[in-house]
Length: 265
View 1 (tube, helix red, strand yellow):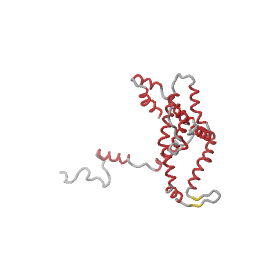
View 2: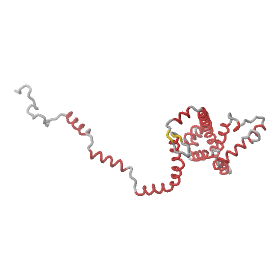
View 3: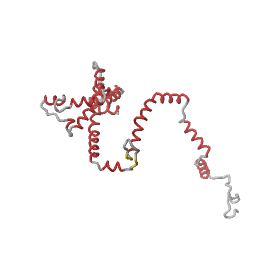
View 4: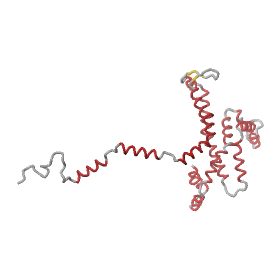
């Protein structure tokens, strides 16, 4: 007769698992072995593989040097005439700098005076007006001109594209003088044209209420660079998309809204 409490594991030494281990115990052992964190060798190997993807080959290094050499004139100009002046202006904004004297650190005093200056808020309002009204209007007009210049079968289309791009290459000073004459309230071409149809023209640059609108008009006139960008994007839209839309009965507005604008965005 078997003694009570005795079993197959009675005589097994303490701490030694018998050969008849259950399936649940074996599964726990496997999971423990799999979940064991990787050692230092495995981590080092993973890091080396990660850095291998960032290393450049000999040809890639040569191409990088060639590219940097070609853009080096622009880099020098950007560092000397854009980045350095911007950083210097930021530093001098915290000082009292009179050009011929050493700058004296004043902290946030300049910004305190700026916030309390009513002219600052007037300038900020004018800037917001030009941004909210002028920029979207210039983008819409540029897109419309690009759509017209992208039409096929028009003779002399290259000449029209050149004409619309010409304002971009005109110097800013010359363009400003030109628009001062055009928007003159007395004998300007714009106001004379308005008077010819019975409309009294505004004062434009000579009237504070209309000066911002005159600047917006100048911005739209010089939007030829944006027109070229949109024109390049429009020429990259596949013709098959328009043909598929036409098969579905889409009109010009539907094609513009659901094909053209999503493809150039």
